[in-house]
Length: 277
Image (spheres, rainbow, N blue to C red):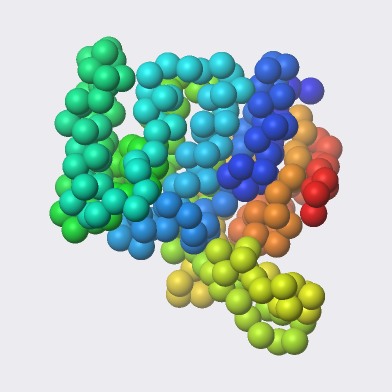
């Protein structure tokens, strides 16, 4: 049993992902495209693209599990300082985008050129007033690749993996850019988007969630990523979790086309329960 698919969030499956990679499994991570919080929130709001944070986290986990420790991986793991003024944060970003960081200076010219191209594509698109503070350099590179490759997230992930030397796959379950996750509580009230559900007040958590809904801004259903459908068709095992049930696991099953694909797959499916939740 080698080809294993993990449906999860960005970080909850880290330990299992690393262990599987170190034991020779061919791992594919399927991550959310509806994350609305964290450092990727400002990118999503400015560029109207799907969230790249969970994708980048899963890619970095894959790199760690596979023992990828090159300079590109180190750059993608870097984060800019928090609590800086807008101009100071931009200057820190330019330390990377202009190739002055020591890791970039010693990098092989082809890799260096690709990284700088994606960083500068990102910078030129978000505009001079963008707030770079506390931003992930990996998120900036991945977003720049997304923009440079005509908004094709699968191509952006492919080139990002090649830059880092990552063998395993990471795909969002949908390529739609405008997905919004909402939850209806048992008292009829609704909470949205994803980060509001994740950080709901204790009194709301005691009431409980009746159902979750995933839809595009125009209320049309999310469409499955073709790369995910291909991975499911060729899987030896499909695993769900660990991860937050209502925001990282169940919403994957609301993406149009995924449930029929899983039902057709000629392999076991397993739910990995959360230990601490």
